[in-house]
Amino acid sequence: MPSDLDTLLDMGFDKPKAVLAVKKTGGLQGALEWLESNQDKSYEEIVATSEKGGNAEDDLDAEPAPIQPGEQARSLVCNECGKKFRSQVQAEFHASKTQHVDFAESQQEIAPMTKEEKEAQIEEARLKLAEKRARMSEQDKIDKKRNEEIRRKSTKETQDLKEDLKKKEQLKEAAAKRKEKQDEIDAKARIKAKIAADKEERRLKAEKEKAEREGRAAPRDAVAPLASTTSGPVESKPASAYTEARLRLQTTTGNLTKTFPVTTTLYEVAAAITQDTGNEVQSFAQNFPKKTFDAVDFGSSLKELGLIPSASLIVR
Image 1 (tube, helix red, strand yellow):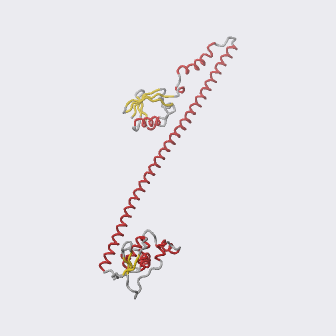
Image 2 (tube, helix red, strand yellow; image 1 turned 180 degrees about the horizontal axis):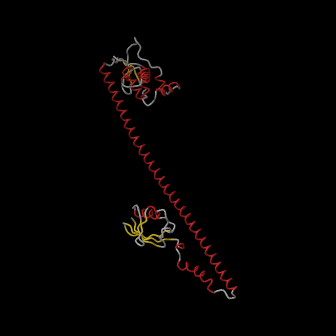
């Protein structure tokens, strides 16, 4: 018949822990209980705890020994649960596990387990061990699934944040480009105006000098063209004078009328429509003059596209 240690090794227990279990308990049943209670601890942790003094439970198990040959057969009974033990060591181990303290000697001798009883006990222990491992495996699956859900949620939130930051950066870059382009247009306009003013001033000066040489008065209408030039744009109010654009937008869900600053890009207009209607905007169409604005034009402002002071657009 195989020894208790061989039986434990056949059941799949690690040899160091199995040897320690048999040494501490002195029997198969106690060894199984000890291994079950210490299955979450490594052999090194158990040894380290014993070296440091351990706890009250380890003190009780510190000097386990099986019944010696020639020792008088007797048994001990736990008055609290009725369980019987063949040796003092087994009773002490039971006390350390259950905190039972009421024991008494019994004249009844406990017969050794038969081969069938021992096999039945081993099978029961094996089933309990397999059931516990299955529960732990199922819990591991649940924990793994929960951790994966947390990771996916965290990844999605991070991606959404990155997308939001990317869109803001794109809008910022578009605004900077519009400002740079507008500053360039304004600078060119100022240069042209300066050139025109200098040219007009030279013309008037030349006419005045010519009139003086000829002994006649300078023409009264010499400054008239300048006056009409300065007064004309004020009356007609050029595009540069408008600060807002009024758009009539025809969408699949109805018509919208919105007012935007003239520096607003077509991309920002599309974003506002998407927020209101929930539909993605691919392009805009204008009937008069007939024109289509697609993704290439989305980076341009309403002023640059000539959609001021007002325009009617079909949203697609």
